[in-house]
Image 1 (cartoon, rainbow, N blue to C red):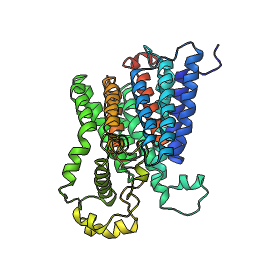
Image 2 (image 1 turned 90 degrees about the vertical axis):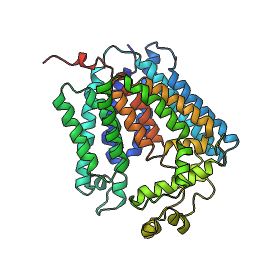
Image 3 (image 1 turned 45 degrees about the horizontal axis):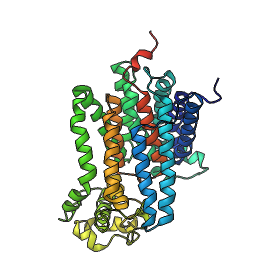
Image 4 (image 1 turned 135 degrees about the horizontal axis):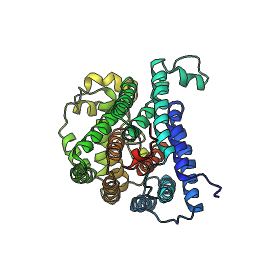
Length: 402
């Protein structure tokens, strides 16, 4: 008997804890996910499943290898080398975990159960914290008074719910449960000022419905569309932003993203082939400067000048809030090509509504928020891919008869 828990049990434990943990401290998902991946990989190796990696893992390792190599020309060589090695380790563990999960004919019962229960618990806690002015998050931090920053830390929890929801909906046994779970998550997310998660949950459920109606035919459009977006988005968006469109109708944070993208694309064009180096967005020359009056005028944002001054909005604060632009900025055309290949492989494997919906939700959130290499976010995406692998089309077969 193996000393290690079964890979599906380790995955189930992550799914039970991650949505709840995200409410109280979303950064805890990184160590939780790492432990889960280590346990899954060790369990698979102990069970005699060799270290044969799937194609997606090899492509992810190639991308991280390119990032590690970028330390040779990066603006911040040490950080590029560190991030290439760190994300590469997660990709390797994810590949080993995928091999450990194997190709089950049925979805393991623990994954079914805790995917649902964890999501429900996380959603209810998230909604309770939001509607109680973040009392729960203040309590665990020992704060007696409300703090504006408490709300910002809850937004990642909404993203966790958004990307897991399509898979959780897929495994529900009937239409009523599917609808009830969807409504609960949507109401909770839309009670929050989490714009990326709102768009993500809508994209995820739209993808779910599209696949349910059209089947695998939807992939014939989705795969080339995603590849084209990865390869062409910065050039197309850059051409549009060069015209100075009026974005004053946008909320301040959304308009700020437009300015960030404009600055990042301009810097990207300075090193289009190799990029500035992995995780170099935070060190791009000029990125630390505050948005100027000229930039605001160019996008007709003078009426919001007071808001930009109050938050001290920078041209490029830490990351681009768009993973495609960040890939191009940091890893250039080579990194973009590897990313396009990786996403194409993952998307081709999205062969049921839950998988396709989860991909759509994660793709939407990744292009509107979070850094491409944030540890908690990368760990979540790796475990999301493994959950999608575990939730197979025969999921209904393992439900006990009533």
